[in-house]
Image (cartoon, rainbow over all chains, first blue to last red; front, side, top):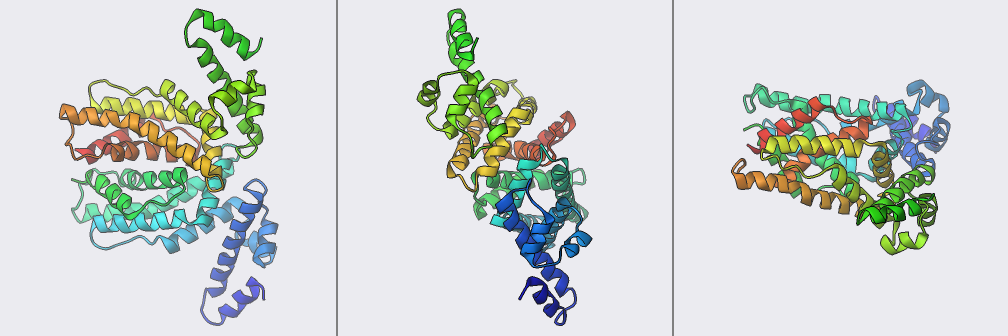
Length: 199
Length: 199
């Protein structure tokens, strides 16, 4: 039973199921290929073969390996890191940071992030792909801050991206350096620090 | 004329000169070897050969490639990123951030940082080395915040490391993602954000 067969079977059960299953199989294959061949040696044919999907499916949908990587990172981040809307900035930020740490700290995401980072100086498309991902996520996450400004929780001269980056970048960098996701205490201290900017 | 010869010649002129020249030659050789062989293939013998120094000099002084990398990163950071003491927190932070960006953004430091990051999941010693570097630099940089607290510029409940990380991590992460050092405007916005958070 290939992933494509499983995907086809699932289509009968729920709309969009095949597409989601293909994406999931391709993400798993991408991670395995990155681990085996590195970013430089990554081929879409090999990803297709390992995912058990037709290579034309991959080419039609993603075209380049950078587009594939960005799309899969975004798809996964959207699923694992929904944009919280609890009604309170502090709770929103804690939920966001917790989910972002869980997502970026997962071994398969660490593999993608580290592979892309090691290639960025030699591969302008890798830099563009990571930049695309970061900009897309920032556009989602800054909504949290904009809502807090609209509710009057924050002054309207606070730069939403500055706040989100001051919160998430130290957590991401510590993971990249130490190889360990931040714990709950570190997440709350980071949130309370950036909330000082709101006061 | 080898680096060792040059180093010996310089000893006559100023104390510590030989040691500094060996370190400089070894840093240059380390960067070139990292670029050629990657972190995994790095050998101290090859670094010694390329630096034109005796390999026992390297083994006696550094012993492991991780110790070599940390020591050279720290030596370079101390030289390029002195801890500012201008009497004002904002000016200190701007000078610190500007120097940190110049240091970490230099191609040879980017090569070391990216090589170490790509190895961290497979190489516990690479993780320990980067962690050592970050802790050493934090211990230096947090003095800036402690002095501001002592002067009464900041409340004494501000966590110095939280402030320094909220300032430097976004600048470092943007460099790692985008491959470009932050400009002066980005540095000043980052400083003013953390000052608002700490106020």
